[in-house]
Amino acid sequence: MLRQTGGNKTAAARILGLNRTTLYRRRSEML
Image (cartoon, rainbow, N blue to C red; front, side, top):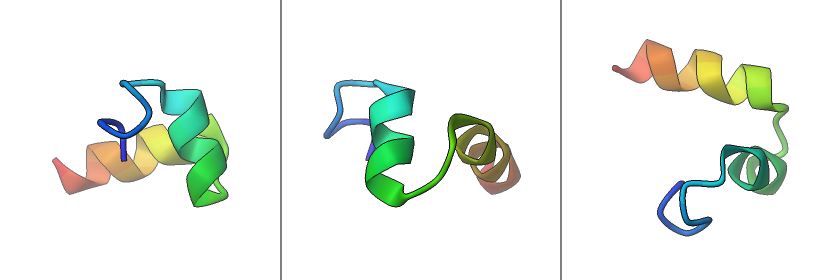
């Protein structure tokens, strides 16, 4: 998803229907 948005985390979160904080949390859980 970040590739599609050029690394724009806010745009990626919006596309996924999440807020930016949730996106960061989910991303850190995946790593």
